[in-house]
Image 1 (cartoon, rainbow, N blue to C red):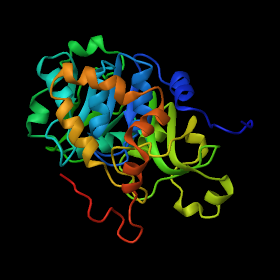
Image 2: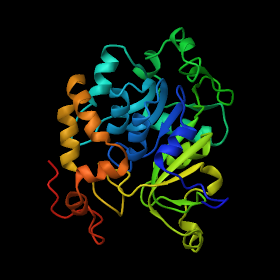
Image 3: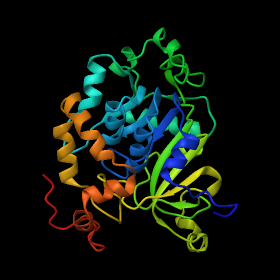
Image 4: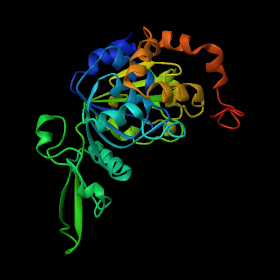
Length: 319
């Protein structure tokens, strides 16, 4: 590895940059471009006490919760859309109050991520005013004292200084330690390209103290620099680059592969109880990402490759 290279294995990247108790932000959206490969490595190393930020979360966050890695979450939604309602390990933990959960609206939360990327300590919004999201706090002000990575308040409501008689909801921005994001292309120095929808990924990467990128393709820097208008993040925002083909599986990765209905339906079934989840998890994780892909099987993975003209798998049985 040359002096400018940030290329490393998933195990090394997680060991170096993810620590117990960190504020961890997850990229992607529900079943779209989730960094499952990196999340599995976080579980293998059993990082604990994490406070997780995720806008529209999916099974990757649910796996972290089921594996006992998460202490608190700021979120707006969690489901493997089309395959489950609310993710089951999250739901049980929330109902039993073994997980601290704060609920924001999706638009307010993504605005907060953008504020964090701009270096702001809070953002003023109107989105949640007048709703239960304003009236009901998932984590009380007293309980928040136990969580150094959480802000002291869910928000503050104050008068709008420029429009008398109007109110604003001031939402604290997250202080993100590590963001984990899966992208289509990256070079060894951290320059990367997200194709298709970007969701909150740019903002959490810029806001985080450290960002770990996993990529489908590791390409020469010159190839990405030939079309700089298509690139998403400069290397200065990235601490580690991990080459993980199918690193978002079983979620989809635009232009590369579709989501895997068989895997998502399996997860919907095995995650119904903690006992079933615990029996399933070791085999799911395997020793590393290569072992995981071997378990899924090359034929099944090849069948998920998208039709370049359609952008998805034609005839894929989705239920």
